[in-house]
Length: 338
Image (cartoon, rainbow, N blue to C red; front, side, top):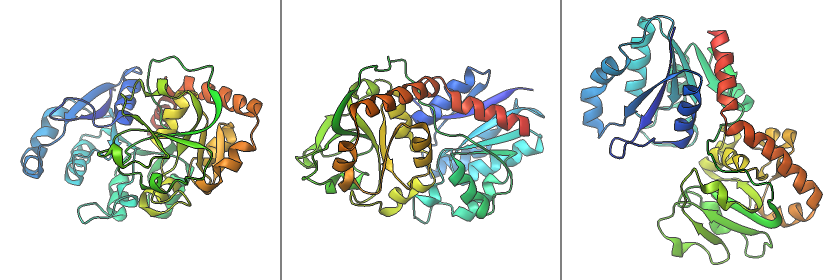
């Protein structure tokens, strides 16, 4: 029996399309999994013409009782994913689907498969690795009936030193696609807690003056830029409250930015109704809030000693996420089931 994991790479740049997915491939390769790299299609015509040939060429060596981890969604298309699973099931290959995102919950467009179609696809797997308990409960309610295990949180690889000396400060750090993160534009000028921004933006000059844009940095060195305060896990249209599809998606998903901050040993501020709010509270690695209008009072209520304890707890998790603890554990559980 052999083990495989798919990693999608950008056809033009030959780099992974997602750090989360490339990290999964890295960590599972440490466990003896062979990484099947697949380049993205150029366009819809390329996808239509070459899907069958690609599956035949790249997956021909898989045999009965081999295990394949599909990182979902592949972004190679609903047709590709269904054809791949159908072909491999005929060969009695064991399929484990690791959910990165349920796109029907965060996007609304005609090309996007509906939640019903996504559930049908996930049910074809021998086991699904759901992001967390709230996602698993939601998927069960919507018709997922295959075996499931929980990931917990995403791992985050880097080889940088984990800071032992983060400074207790009235500062939040947010990393992500700033063009998508509309809430930053309503972050109150009156807040004493400073908001630092890291990431991609098409117009740095359009960022409000009371926010501090730090720049765009490589994913594997970004953690070195976090020196003070807290990481912010928030999304959507408003700082006042969670609004919009991206914001409400926090009820179900595992934000990769939480793993980023923990990999740096940094405590977080997160929406109190996020799927991972319970994880943050249980592990004592941050603060919960229903509005960014409350962060002044929230952080002022904390002592430096309490902050240092949160940092200590975050560093313990940093040792786990930077070494692939959560995906390795989930895959061991999945293989026991299938």
